[in-house]
Structure formats: structure tokens, C-alpha cells
Length: 267
Length: 292
Image (cartoon, rainbow over all chains, first blue to last red):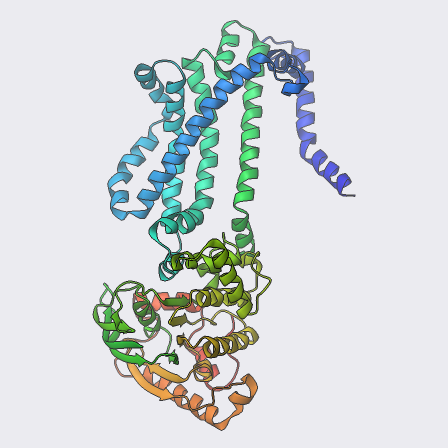
């Protein structure tokens, strides 16, 4: 019964995607335009490119392992560094009125600078390679985390802070057991935005300044005029973005179960 | 012993919440503080808890001046849904303050469990506060305060947001706890019935700025029963007297009318969730008591 319902739910969710892909296939085949290869050709390129490996490696080819591990390592190191720095700075700014007033204009300006414009500068300072890519990602995605954290920390209920004071919860534990958990829903929202920014910045940094990774593969295919390969790269990035978001949502839902529960009750 | 002399507090906007208030509470006493909404009750309680530094006067607890939150003091706030941490289980909420008492993890858990049992919630430890009813959540707040083993327990309109039946149960719980633990309890309320039913002594405050308007001993036996005690002539007499005093206190010439006062009034209203003077008049005449 529940398997049936699950199956129906799945069909309800994906039927439009299936119809769209089928329509895409038919139209591109009819038109026969080189710039728009049919999805079946893209899937074939995708498989040749990255998924021709053995089943034991989840069909990932050696090339896939090289490309993905380089790209994803940069993405996650940059994102994690931005996460730690953003939460630490955001908490400090959120807790201190003085710090907030002092730094807010600077932060608002830095946040407004589109991160890709800094890539030429970072290439100059760090040269082409991993460091420059990680710095680009970290600098670009730190802002949503920082601003959301400072916002969340400032918005902690005064009664929760009073309760912690009355019951002698010390400064350190107050931060980690009261203030940060209370701000966690906002922090997570910032981290989620940061993750999708990080994927964008990973690709941009690879397009202009890398010899490895999915982005550099994509630009290489474009230069060689191998359009199915280029499209395969685009589709692959879409899949990755989708997967990251889904995984993060799963994690968030687990860790913030209390928030959903408390909110459902209040509403 | 809690000793308050000449306590004065005015907020930065010039609003005077408390004006030279004197009050002494003996060890083991259960004192009800009753007064009209927005009369400065919450400010008084926050001064005693060391959460606000009063602008004048002196508060000493067991001989030591209150400067910052005293070590052996606990508070039960009205708004349990905000004062319990929703990301911690009930047991962790109760155990959180105990680390400071230098106990091991196992001891903290045992103490939390014991406190939960004493408020009638032996099986709630693994649940989250928001999975419990309002009355049960307020029991958890009381358990948290009990596990902390304070010498002074402050209760800030603790039953203002639960239904009438739950309220009576919780009043009896406070009486039972007071008898069992022999701690000093200061219960702030705007409910006249409750102040008489629970208290050993009732202090009536003036409308803002708060001053002690009257101080009455409750001449009822320590054993109280919701139905029987409330029917006693002595209870009826006391309730009428406190009611008259509260009304009188609310109408002193030149007093700030409700709704016109500054910051403290706003915060008082927030803590009372719309339970105002009109419901108070009801409870005075012995009618329905404020529910949520």
C-alpha cells in the first residue's frame, strides 16, 4: 500500500521532467542543429566522459575521479572555511553592538562586490591553482553565512538569554549551547545559500584559471568544439548542484528537527 | 533571608517602575506578591534576580548584597515556551544548569530525573519541550528550578498562560514543593485568588511606581485544598480584602493609567499575554479565572 503510494508520489513528481526531456529529444532530432545535441547524445557523452568505470567505483571512470575530486575538494574546503569564518565573525558581530556599528558599512560594501570580479586579482596574488580557487570560493560565499549568523545571534530571544544567566550558564557554554543553537535556523539558511554560491564560484574559477576540474573540462570541450561533451559538463554541474542541495536539506532537517517541531506547534 | 531596603528603579526613559520599596522575606516563607498589571512586579523580580541593576536601594540575600545573578537563586518564568530551550530534550533542559554545581554527567542526569519525578513527569525526559502540553512544560520549568536546589525560588506569573484546571494543579504542586523542599518562594501574580491560596503572606503593590501598599499574613492552615480552602470564610474574607487593596492601589491619585506607562508596562503585557485588569476583576468576584 505505502509502496504504491510512494510510486504514485514519484510519478506525480517526475512526469513533467520526463515529458520535457522527451520533447527536447524530439525537437533537437528534428532540427538537427549542431549547437543543440539531443539529450540521448549528451547522456552518451556524459557516460563516455565520466561514467565508463567499473561498478565497484559506482561506474565512475578514472577521469571522473580526477575531475570530481579536484573540483569538489576546492568547493568543500572553500565552503567549510567560509562557514567557520562566517559563523565566528558573525557571532562576534551579532553579540557586540560596537563591533556591529563599526564593521557593518565595510561588510555591506564587501558583500556588494561581485566575487567573480576578484578572480583576476586572486590569480595575480595566488597564481593559477588550488589556492586561488579556494580563496575565490571562500571569499565569495562567506557573506551569506556571516550576515545570517550575525542576524540570528542578534535575534536570540531575550528571555532565553535571561534564563541562561539566571541558571549560571557560563559565557562559553552560553555561546555554544544557547546562542548558536538558537541562531542555527538562520545559520543553516546562510550555509545553504553559500553552498549553491560555492558551486557557481567553483565553475567560474575553473573556467578562467585551472587545468583540472569539471569547469576546465567544459571550457576545453567548448574550445575543441565538442558540443555534446560541453553539454555533458553543463548537465553534470546541474546534477551536482541538485544533489548538494538535497543532501544539505536532509542534514538540515535532521539537525533542526526541533525547530520544525516547535514551529509547527506555535503555528 | 531576603532583605530589600529603599529599592528604586527608573528606566532610561524616565519611567519610575519602583519607588523606595522595603520588603523582608524570611527563610522558608512562601510570599505572594500581587498587584495590578504593569505595576512594576516584573521589574522587582528582575532586580532580585540580579538581571537588572536597580538605580537605588539595596537587596541582600542571606546577608550578601545582590550584584549580578545570585548563585542559589532560580526563576520560573511565565513564558515556558520561550524559557525552555526547544533544541534540548526535557532532561537536558533540566540538567543544563547543573554543570555549574560540579556534578558528573551521570549525577546530572540522575538529578534531572529525580526532579522530573517530583513534578509528576517521570517519563518525559527523552521528549522535547514542544512535544508536551503547556502545563507539562511549566512543570519542566519548575523541575529545572528544583534540580538547581536554590535557597530562593522566584516565580514570575508562572501560571498566567495555562488553563484553569492546569493552573490549580500547578498551584498545588508549588505548595507541595514548598513543603517538601523548605525553600523560600516568591510568587508574583496578578491573580488575587491565587495569591491568597498559595501564600503564607500576601504583599500588595501599588500601581506604578511599585511600593508596598499592604502586607497581610494568610491565616489559613498549611494544608490547603482547592475546593475546601476556597470555601472557607477566612479565605473569602482575605480574598475580598486583597481585592479591595489591589483596586485601591490601582486608583491612587496621579498614578499612571494602564496603557500610558513606558517600557516596563510593555514588557509586563508581553509576559501576561493579554490577561489584563478586566480578568482580574473577574477573579476578585470569585468568577472565572484567566485562561489563555
